[in-house]
Image 1 (cartoon, rainbow, N blue to C red):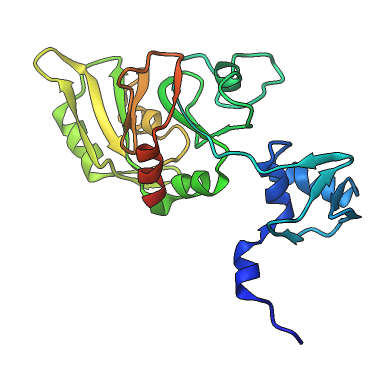
Image 2 (tube, rainbow, N blue to C red):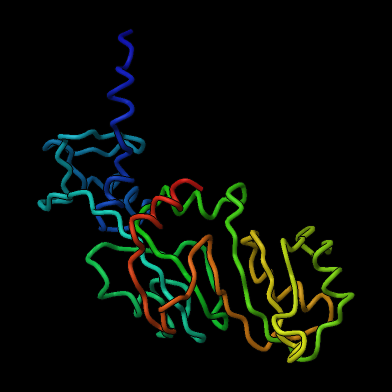
Length: 246
């Protein structure tokens, strides 16, 4: 049997990823397009999942030629009462509505912020980077400002820094402290690398506090500097390169 040229293997890409990168749909939806016979590669219908294409191949959806998109990286300062999704059947405000005019490419959120949490949210069409940044092994730095219903005891800050056992496992803050102990001990800054669902709220609820306001002020090395609530900006090449090195 003739062995595959490793250079050809390196330059190839799965067909569903190629379709997703063209901005048509997600990879899962691309699989449906493939199996339904709507995709042609170099003029021939391809129905086999796992098919790979390479530079120079022509991929078409019905009669429309699909082309790879430019990678886009957006940083959004999400307001409260906005859903971290690209579509909501109930008609609620979504992050898609805040960035829909940013670029022609279809960008999606990297991780989530719940509806009542504000702050930094990265959106991109670079699936490889998104997967890497959301994987626990990457240990991406996230800093939150937490407003509680009552002053936080020092012993509870120590407990959080040492770690606590929640229903879904052990969690330990990388750092935690009052933001301005001399002024207001109801406001705490906490640094985590965990991306578990509602993790900050659950940490404080476990210790008997109610989170009144939660804001993510830093993601990796990205901050909210010069980015008002509800606004977005493109990342700089330097910022993109830093994220790629994580």
